[in-house]
Length: 216
Image (cartoon, rainbow, N blue to C red; front, side, top):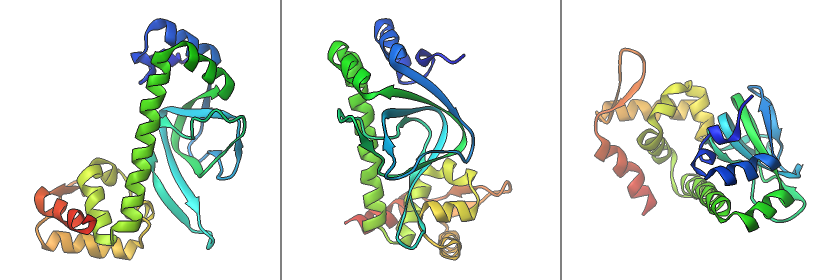
């Protein structure tokens, strides 16, 4: 049986804070491709991914997925003191996952009694905000080439673990567009594909300049 205190960032709390959180936590297991919640669902708990991986996305008016990111750890919904929380997006497991669920009222009580817990959740909420800042940057500022360059620069290992169609979906571009951009980056000697079929970066500076120029 998993113990909340075995996982980051909860293992960084003192023992009393760990026990206080464990008393109000429910650990739930989800299978790959299982939906944790849909956008606009009424969610009565705060969900915290502690092991596994989830895909976060919305569905536009054309029934197309608008990808927000892959999360392997952290808050999956807003940490609010409201009794009724409405999900902003869909959260789907991309692998078997373990999630800690906290009742809002119970969490509010431990916030009041254990400042260390409040500080930890504040840090995690800030990380979540930074993820959405990156989404805004990628979707509203970057063109397709800058999206690919940004992903390769910051998430090369993650990029290399997925198939071309999956990476295209994550970047909200067409697979043909991704292929064209990767070919150009190869021709410009910015990247190469090794014998294992994985992308390696040859010129970090040139790769960075592609999305830095777009962000100006």
